[in-house]
Length: 295
Image 1: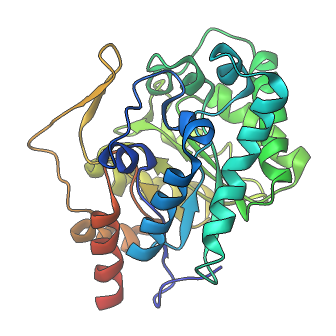
Image 2: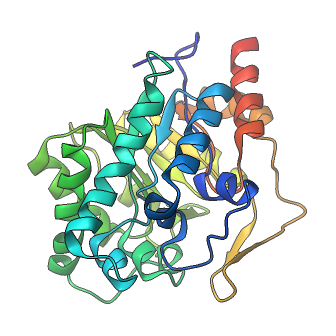
């Protein structure tokens, strides 16, 4: 993998906010995945902007992309499968302009498909078999499209984690695995000391957290490293909170936002993959990359 000079892998930031900044309305249930159908060139433009800002990884527009979700939007199954795979193709085509960079195929949680904020709660009330039937075919579609690795991200619940880890073992494909957390627990309330034992498998190259408050990162990184011995991954959001009822982010004025200033402590704790999630854009990723280079 291409790395910064001190060994850190710099990730990209949020796709949705970067698309919104370019004038796109992402308020429907497909969220950023809608543009896989309606304007794939705009997704490519955002990947390019993050690479230009110093990101070493482009995370595909497949977080909210699923056959079920596309079918609910009136897209046939064959076309839905093509669109999901196209998320990897778009990123790979942009990556050709940036030798040595990587493409990570985003695997969002079941709750993202529900588009009701469930990815911040977990415990969906469905069986492990339902989760397996949802995730399995999508993982294969993404993997067969040729990413460098899978980004299994924003997982709120150990039940879903167990299903996904089982599938990763079967598919035997490299991935990072990150939970959505609040404090020292998953969003569903399980202690991270227990949750991090689940993705401690050979296929997972890094374990950590994303789409959390920046001030939750430090302890989570320390815990991930202590439990798994693997490199930690951390890409928090801006510190704002998601209002699922109104489909908008609410500002938290006291939340720390300067990820570049916090990165040194996170690296000291064992983070080897750092970037941003929702409401973190190319400007912030450039500042993070510059801070790493200056170290």
